[in-house]
Image 1 (cartoon, rainbow, N blue to C red):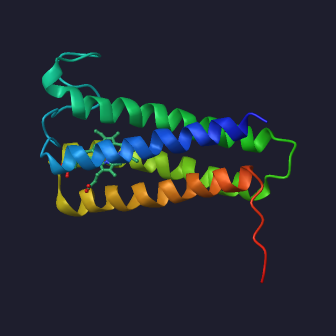
Image 2 (cartoon, rainbow, N blue to C red):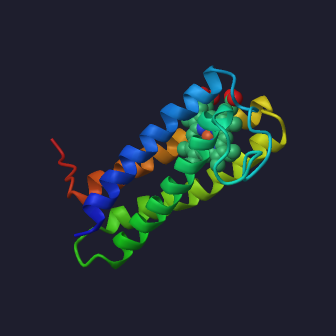
Length: 143
Ligand code: HEM
């Protein structure tokens, strides 16, 4: 079933994206690339924009993977009912998160928005992690 490898790859890519996001924030690089969606210099900008640019590129890849995982869960013939719910939630979160990323830049790293960006990132990671567990057939057993 394609949903298994897809959801696992998605989890790894998303985790990496969040680590890079943490670096962007901690290194004070949040406004190095002041435009949206592209950095100055076009599709592949010069190396001074690299870290922030890579955060955006991986965000786009993560978005595609999350939506592909949702579609795979919808179409799966296996019993992945709960994964359908968590993967659909993840897709809604990732679209919100990418939009919010643009707003974070537009409003020059407004503190509340950066905090919400961080908070949605965690909820998104949890929904993708749950999707992986459900797709792999996690059983919650009562003691
Ligand atoms: C799936 C999509 C995304 C996820 C999961 C994500 C996650 C994160 C995380 C976890 C951080 C670190 C937050 C912190 O330490 O306070 C961060 C920082 C940041 N993200 Fe994203 N991000 C995503 C998409 C985007 C997009 C599309 C942009 C658009 C430009 C963006 C712009 C930023 C910026 C500017 C920062 C640094 C904020 C600062 O300087 O404090 N993010 N991101």
